[in-house]
Length: 377
Image (tube, rainbow, N blue to C red):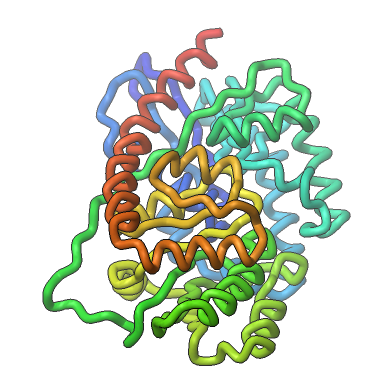
């Protein structure tokens, strides 16, 4: 079951049945590092089976309401009953929950990875009953001694306002093993005109309505034939989905044919869109970390963000920051970038350097040190 003398860490990946964005990327990066781990200090137990998880599409995408409720029943049953029993079965020294919620009790220490403060800051984006139940169990878990880990100093500052913990909240930046991608001479752009790109689920907090307005202003000011490519699915729940509002604005500003909705893209097609984009625009008003910024850096793209704490923390000097979240200011940043070749080159160069700060290896080594402190305390 585990190597004699090693510490057992039970990693709960049940939420991967549903996860599509930041938590999924975080967990995937963690699992990749665990696969490469050959040390003798820890034995990692992954549950449920990753193979089973990858095959299941039942809860992915825009699902019926009954599926959402069924998932919640399974999820809370897993957290409150199955996971604690598994911790006893595997004789866990630590139970890691990358999806925010730790069990209320278990064998060994418990660590919750809380990625952001969305539950508290934007309650209107969640079903009221579900949110109330979730926060009840989260507070019970933290109150019974679970440790809290988060992904950025910005997220830590936000979460600290809402949670009272018996242990200090620790921030360990997410790390990704992103290889720098170079364009092949044989590759061709998937779109005939130059374009800005945004990749992500169309949730309201992504602020894509502002991006549509900014793009409309940009086109009126620019003398070039630009497009805007939006890659990603609709929001998974009606309360979060911003696609109807985005679509209405495209029609209002007569941007049909200029704003391209690709939907979900497989990795090779997504890579092609990244490769030939002029810049990545990320107007989100609420992020705990900002993984898409690093992804854009890996393709050598200059990046525009709003004045949002986590995105500025991750991007550093390698991003162009809009003066505000107003559409006019984003349009000004887009226009500046489209006209200034030197600026584009400098941002690209800085972005590639910035990638070295957030590697998977640094992330995992920091986690291992954190696990040791928690287990030994």
